[in-house]
Length: 77
Image (cartoon, rainbow, N blue to C red; front, side):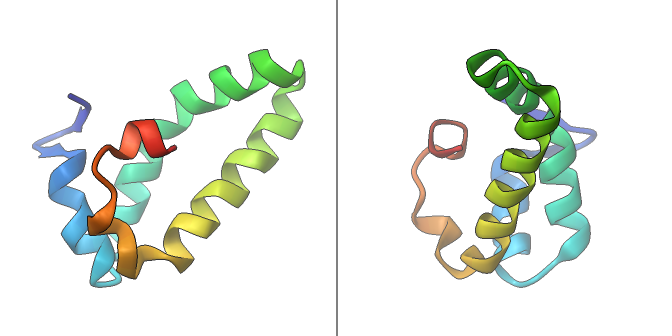
């Protein structure tokens, strides 16, 4: 289970749902390195992978009201 500091990602979800930008930033910092590498390997472009990742997290932020409905955030991402 991924964690950042004293938080596990599940602890951040209710905060993000309430609009907590710091919690969202922590979530991004937690998942971005692994996701960037995963995407970059699939598309052979680190720069494009970073763009895709940013778009993904923008979507997560815009739809944060529904974030608690996601059973497994790592699988969702």
